[in-house]
Image 1 (cartoon, helix red, strand yellow):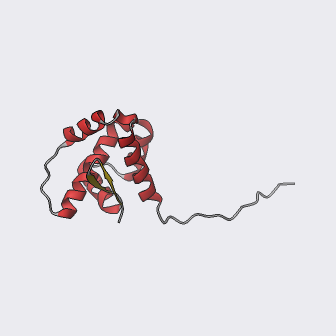
Image 2 (cartoon, helix red, strand yellow; image 1 turned 30 degrees about the vertical axis):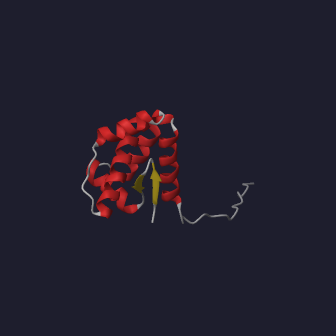
Image 3 (cartoon, rainbow, N blue to C red; image 1 turned 60 degrees about the horizontal axis):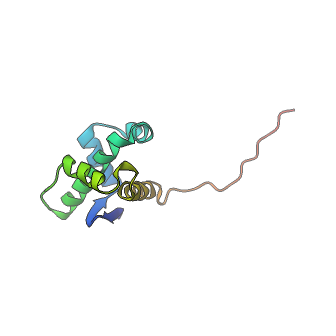
Length: 113
C-alpha cells in the first residue's frame, strides 16, 4: 500500500488517492502534472488534503480537518519549500513510479548515409 506518515498523520497515495483527487477537483492527471510543474503552491495543498481525506475514508474516520488545516500545516512546517512538503512530494513521486517497468536496453541511432 502506498502511504507515508508525516507529522503524525497518515497520507495515502496511489490509485485510491488519485481517484479521490480527480473526483474532488475535477482535474485529470494531465492537469495535475501541468499544475505540479507550473503552480505547485496551488496544487500541493489540494493533493495533501485529498491524500489525507482518503486515508481517513480508508480508516472509517470522520474528517476533522479542512483545507485550511493543510495550509496551516504547510506554513508551520517550512512552507512549500520545507521538509514536510518535500517529504510528501518524494513519497508521491515514489508511489507513482513504484513498479513501473524501466527500459534499460540501449537503442542505437541508425546513421543515414
